[in-house]
Picture (cartoon, one colour):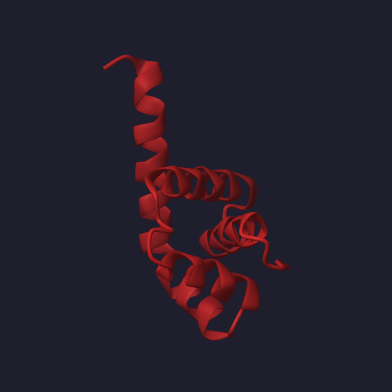
Length: 92
């Protein structure tokens, strides 16, 4: 594999690790009842909503949010807010 082709794999691995390490913070954030995250998560429960294209975009949004904030909870919130915006729902 060429170094350039490894970049997406490394980003996904880092995002997965951040989610696992940050899961207590993420669970606390979701438990507080964040309406933006709830709307983004509801989107994924719709039949056929989680297409490969949508999941790839979600992964990119999460990786960008993680790189910018360093916080898995903030990165998840940002990525779910993008989902809510793209589906015409209000995000905050």
